[in-house]
Image 1 (cartoon, rainbow, N blue to C red):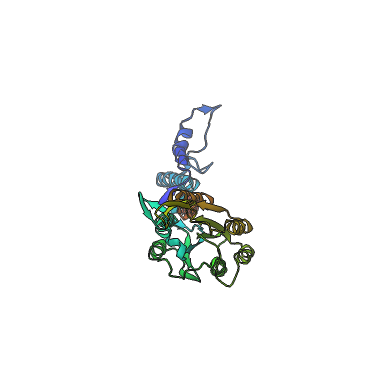
Image 2: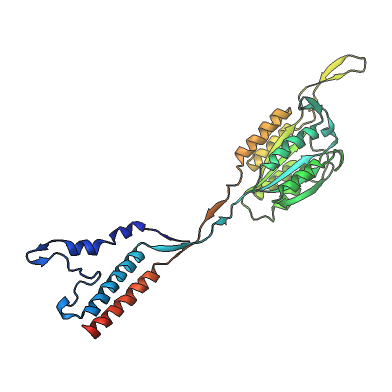
Length: 325
């Protein structure tokens, strides 16, 4: 559509008429704008009545064309979405045998760690609209389950389909970090983040966790680590009694903390589902979602069209004066 940037300019339309009606000063009319734009035109008695009428019409048209040009007309196109920059965010999820430990609660029911994780991490994934997400599942080995994609629904579905032991019973934390770094190395984003969740210690793989963290630091990959699992659990003893155990005794918090510190991230500890939800909420704050889509309307200046009309009418008016007056 066409719009005027300075529409108030059209308030000047009656100015020539007002100037012509002003009282005379010292025997002379205050304004010489008998015909808009021109300061001097031949006296009425020297001009033919037909030429006089034409010049009046042309002068007013010139005045309107000039005001239209001054109002800065422009063509405004349809809204165009601006690209927004999200993050390359990789999730590395532990599927080792210890994730089947039923020390979590979900909707008041005891569940294993992986089931609780799927519920919380699934909600986190759904909120990352605008980010490129990837998914690594690791146990004895690390596997790329979902390459980087904007299709967060597919990433979530693949997470929900994961089963304990799919990647082996052991825990290859270093290999998971190394695989994430390898996949992020080819990405052109300046915001590369790995969220690593585990409930144990590195017991498999060909690269140590700290060595992998050093590689991540060199590639500017920030790692947030999450230690998952209850600190205390009551189990039945062999002789019929009950005893308290620490089901997370194998969790290597020192290494998880060091990985996060080396790469500029943070280490979090979740002993229940509520704490895990709070951690993912915190991660949303630390790594904000991509900005909402922004739009702009392309514009094209059109002032030269009315200015061209003004110039054409002026030349035509001069031609009339030379011919008829």
